[in-house]
Amino acid sequence: MRRNIAALSALVRVSGVGIVSATQSATGAEPSVGALRAIRGDAGAPLALVYRGPAGCDDGCSEAAAAMLRSSRYHFKVRYVGPNEKRKIVPSSFTGVALYVQPGGDTSVARANKLLGAQAQQVISDYVRNGGRYLGICQGAYLAGTDPGMGLLSPGNSDQYIATKGASTKSEADTVIPIRWGKKKIYMYFQDGAYLIPSGVPGEKILARYTNGKVAALTKPYGAGRVGVIGPHPEAPRSWYREAGLRDRDGSDARYGHKLINSVMS
Image (cartoon, rainbow, N blue to C red; front, side, top):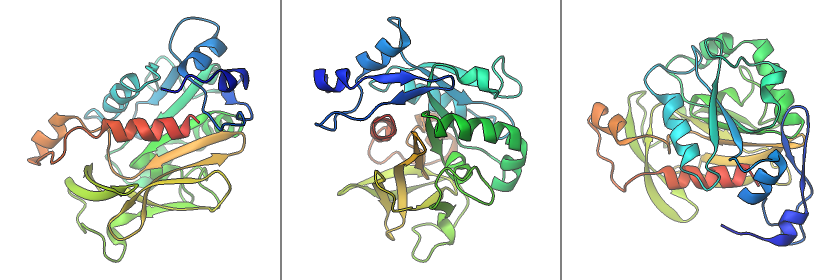
């Protein structure tokens, strides 16, 4: 991890809805863990909220995302948020929050959009617009798009990868697919995930592509905040592979999830 004094002195501010990166230093260095802790005013890790509820899945999507956050270089303190959790998706729940995560789900995008609800979506988009960070995995990437969705990728969007020409899979079933992370070919757990349509705005970063060239992971600014989305599942634990009868061809992909987190937190 880069611990750059200039980056630390670039400072950040805390708004009523989240942690906001100030203008980056001349080196372009991202805030360090130390900087994030400094803004919190304590020695604890930065706080992340992970959605858990009917718009997600009931077989560990939220928990897998939380594990990936905790194992990242930020060592996030994770709290779950949702209609059946102690924390609800209301503005006061986002005070001092460094990152919000919308994990995978096991229902249609249209139904997930309805279950999440317009009020909660407005709270989330306001949080990001005012300087928060959003991480969307699979269903969370779809929901970052538009029609249905929160419009966090606008003027870009998200759509169904398996419907694209030359997709490496045409099935909605759980599988493992090849993608290119930068120049490296890797294999990642996948279940009817999204591809991303870039917006072309300054500050957008394409991190990974599917084998047909469609974008698999990117980060981009949204208002004063930043959005990171990915179609496949870098957080997938080994149990998911076992239960689906799949082989993990190149080991845990959490390290690529960590790269995505680093980019969205920059």
